[in-house]
Length: 207
Image (tube, rainbow, N blue to C red; front, side, top):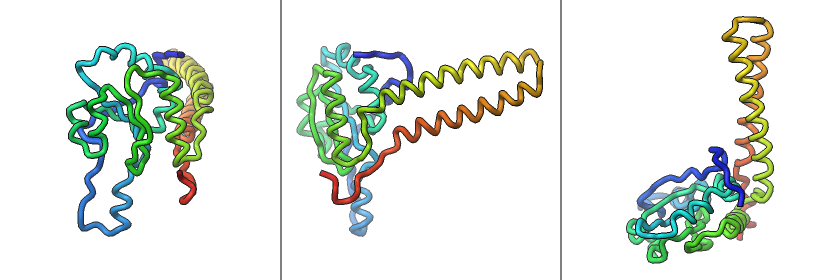
């Protein structure tokens, strides 16, 4: 298990009180269908404040592979009590702490009770993604590590640029470097955005 303190390898949890959506009446069929879909698959953590497995589970969440895979999901945390009131996940509340993987059409694919295992979590992420998307989650960790290496190099260039600006020397050189750093930063951000852009399967080919 590879654990990192780098923010790029941390799960961005969103605390919610409800996972399912209530569909408004009076919509057209097309509007209702669109409203009943999530923009991303969901990675749901039903937590229990009284559970004794928190520290171990936290290690699984900090695994680099899990954290990177999670960036394809809307990662939400919901309390055991709130989950019990949610029409989609109520039946899983008593099993808290538990992880759920949910398709964009609000269909639970799999449930994983504590104690959590990083490898099993990642396999579940891949299985969930394969149902609706073309993205190959398996290759993302390597690409994200390459991006982080380039980001570290960019930070070193920024430090050099800051020193040049502070010294007030070589204005032409400084301006050239400023342009290059800005261009490299934009390119890096674009690479990372592209890496996590969801690629839906053609309609009719989802499982």
